[in-house]
Structures are given as C-alpha cells and as structure tokens.
Length: 158
Image (cartoon, rainbow, N blue to C red; front, side, top):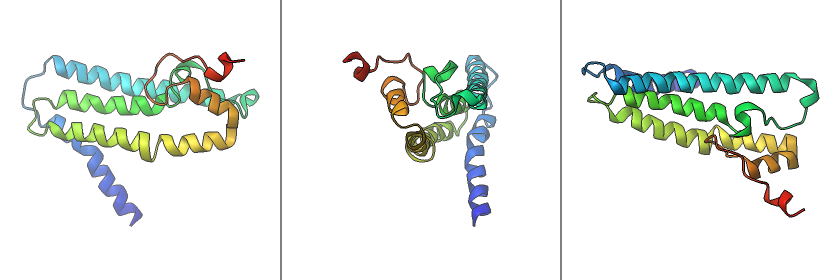
C-alpha cells in the first residue's frame, strides 16, 4: 500500500509538468519567467538547506536556533522556495489547455506545506527541542515567506 501511495503521489506531482509541456504556443516572456522562478526556487531551497546543514554541523550550535542567512527572514525558507518553484509550472503552462493543473498544484502544495506535513510537525519538534529560544524565533520571524524580522514584543518591554 505504501508504494502504491507513493506512485499516486508521483503522478500527481508530475501533472503540473505535463500541463506545461502541453502548451503549443511559441516560447515567450512567461516562459522566461517560468524558468527564472524554477531557478530561483531550486536555488533558494539549496542555499537554505546548505545554510542549515552548516549551522547544524557546528557543535557550538547544538540546541540553538538557526538565524543565519535565509533563516533570519523565514523559519522555513526551504519550504518557501520549494513552493515557489511550483509557480514556474504555472507560468510555463499559461497557454496550455491544462493551465489550471499547476494552479491547483500550487494551492495543494501550499496547504500541505503550511498546514499538514511541513511546518506544523517541524515547528512542534523545534519547540520540544529548543523551547523558549524557538518561541522567541517564532515571535520575530515569518513562518513561511521570507520577510525582515520583527522586534520581539517581549524583549521590548524589558
């Protein structure tokens, strides 16, 4: 059953690419936007993953919260850039009869990452392992979209 569910998921994840490939229009500006989004999404995810791995690889950071690089602006920049990469298929599929498939994929991926399998369990684990330090991080740092950090309201009152 596990492998069958994986096969279904693989087909669903391939549908936005199929929709993009079904476009008969000549290459244009939106195709360039799609390629740029793809590069930005995968590149951003790779940078975020590398920054986190470097942080975790330093023994002095054990039990601390990563706030370096992209992690200063988002608690989950890797998830954000993964989601951003799916927008590339929407741009590439604009002229496809299946243009709506990538849009549905973006919505489903966004919901899944932010509400089901991505952020909720990751945040719960971080709270268990890093406690108040992670709570402070939550108060100052966007959960998903990279954004400048906010002042900590608890620190301002001290």
